Length: 250
Image (tube, rainbow, N blue to C red; front, side, top):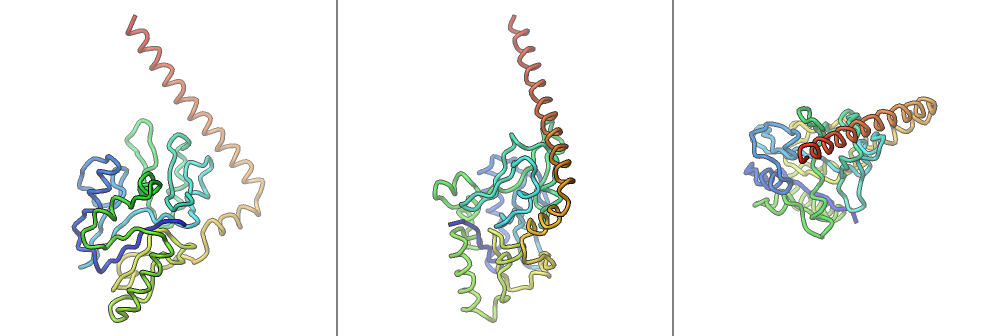
């Protein structure tokens, strides 16, 4: 069963324990980023007197995965959308395709990578909860099986109908996401996109691409060429470094 996160905005106090735990888990530097960056995978944003976490939504049918020409991004059976930097060619299609504008790029690195939350994939694979959920002191972030989190969300909404908006954000948006939200304020006022379709975006993408097969073939060939050149360049740099190291020892 796929795992996920339920974020109850009414319980978030803005302590940012989730941010700190994420930094430790992913060995990221401490900084004062005001938004997601290549070294900040989750960020608590202030929306009036509410606090809203911004992070990868780990979509059920991720658009980023569907547009990646080399399979650097993959959706796991247990929930997280993960990233393999050894396959990435830096095309950044994932950044353009993400409906939530989440992935970030290491623009200043000599060998840049795409960076985003991977839902503590190693912890989740071992049966542990995510670092952010474990660190949350109020239970605003809860980790578990997605279906059980949906039931928990509906239970809270039914038990306090005058408190919560009758909606689970992420339940069916773009086909559903692994990170779900409930709130006492309309999601539109909190800055969430409310114009997204219910159908998974990759379905719309492939509906278009299937009508232009020649373009797909040419595009795939071109992208493979770019990947090969990039890989070859890295091999050459590595070989040159090894040769220099040998020369210095002599």
